[in-house]
Image (cartoon, rainbow, N blue to C red; front, side, top):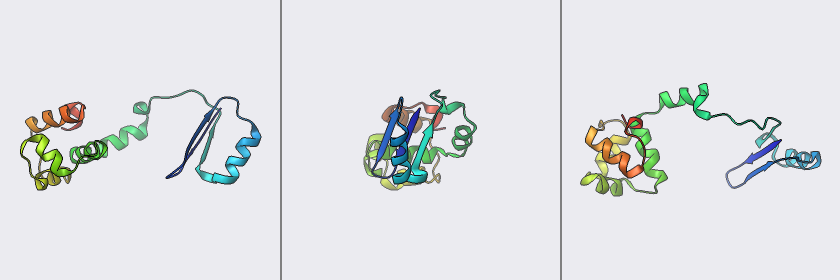
Length: 120
């Protein structure tokens, strides 16, 4: 059995033989934020329809913005790493106004350690 609670500042994951009394306390405290599962089988999220739908809707610019933020970089810092790009140029890439060239995609994939395919 697995129990998961996730709120902005709290994350609780419990697995194994969980007493019913503990689940009752968690349900009382967290309500709908509590997820209880008897299924210990994990699935690959990339095999789900949800993942494929979301992936098809994400633009290359949104991908750049996501990885830039994940690496705690400003647009200016990323522009400097790409090679003398202004903050405005990075902003336009992230807003899908400026397309990502193959050269820039290669640099971004190296900076973020991701595949070029996710940027094109």
